[in-house]
Length: 265
Image (cartoon, rainbow, N blue to C red; front, side, top):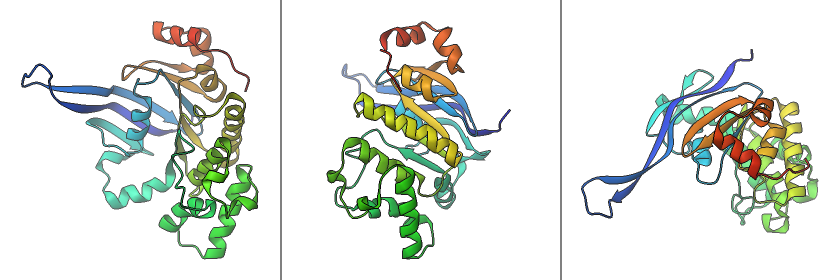
């Protein structure tokens, strides 16, 4: 069995909402992620599926410590991320990246594509300008864009092309682990299928491990090795993709399968 790359145990995130509307002393709160435990093995894609508001994106950000958990354990290659200080987390972030859902809002409109992809290299790597430009050109080629993109701005590209730029940025530091947070939900079906196929190819070429978040069971089934089903902040079922889609055990999983139309990928 391949080693565990990411391990989370009893991970919980509670968002306070302030005073109760009834005027009591009790504070209202939302348990966005509720005692979640998962393992992600090196080289696999763990699909995380559930309806909007189920806590999927919050869980993805917690795993990367982009937001701080209320309680629980997060380990990356055996290292306790919650115990890591600022300097240690800065080093670890080289190996952990994210692809955001919105290809329009996730790119700075004032930065040229070369600068967008170069930014993590400037922060984390000691490279000359020619070395950095060569790396950016290599990354553009890997995601299917040509060199003419270097000097252009994000608004000059389609949604699918912008998502490719975001993927190139996530790959810049050659990470081991990527959280893909609904990377195709803002795209039309045909463009989304191209992005899913791109992610599958990049996984093979770069040896990546994915946490792939989606509300679409067919997309997750196509890409994922295993699937975790999330409902109201909890993981209600985890199993190999084929077992989840052919022999689901939880009623919510069956509802997702019945409600999601088939797509061609």
